[in-house]
Length: 138
Image (cartoon, rainbow, N blue to C red; front, side, top):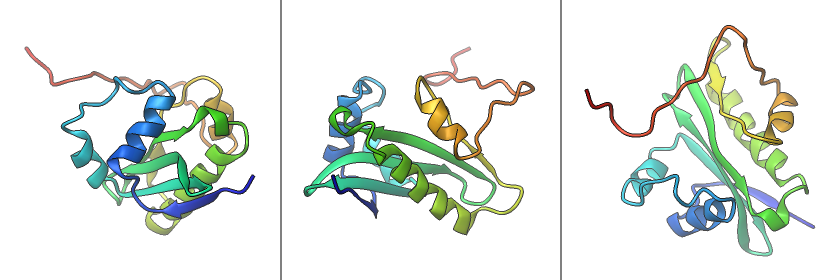
C-alpha cells in the first residue's frame, strides 16, 4: 500500500477521527483542541487513497524544547510503517530547527517504545516523567 506523509496540520475532524480510533477520544477538551492544534510547531498527516490515516505533531518552544506528540495511526493501517514514516518526517523537521543541545522528548506507551528507541530515544534512570491533568488547585 502506498502512503504519503504531508507537512500540514490535520483538520479538527481528521485529528478527532484518527485519535478517537486509537482510543484517545476522552483525552482532549473539545473547546481547547482547535487552539492546541493551531499552536503546534509542526505537524504531518499520513494519507492513503485520499484519506488521512495518521497524524503527528511537534510541540515546544521551537528553540530548546521539542516534543513529539499525538502520533496516531488508524488501527487498520498500523504495522505497515506509517508510524515510522510520521516520526521520520517530524524528526526531519526538528533537525532543521533544533540546536546541538536541544531537548527532544516524548511519552511512549506499549509497543511504541521499540519504534522510538530506533530513533535514539531512551529512558534515563535519573529522570522521571510526571504529569497532571488540569490546573493545580490548592
